[in-house]
Image: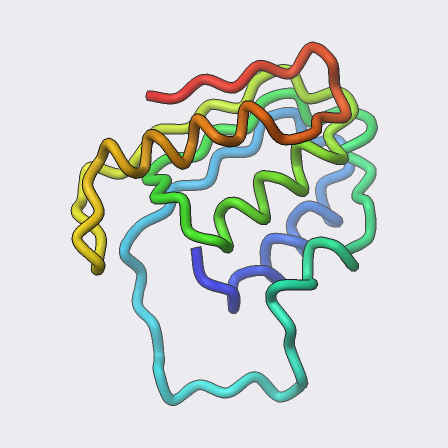
Length: 131
């Protein structure tokens, strides 16, 4: 997940107040190195300053993440969903089977996903499954 995708994800969540299931496939993607946003952007603060979407407090029950590597952007987004997902019941994380650019292996991704178990959750019934 790249930081330039944050606005698209937030636009989608804002546009879908009745969303019940969110599936995000994370792939290798294509990064355009010469792209510069037309405004100042602080990815580390994005989800902290983001509005709380209606679907998080009313309808979003299942989140499926496929291709998880545990990057800081992936983790910050999932922490946001866990912290504000009042009706969230299930977070399913399928770790990537690809080796990382720094030589990380599937077990490293799995450990990063397991760490999410200890993060604060708005929903006491939220379950996190790692595959």
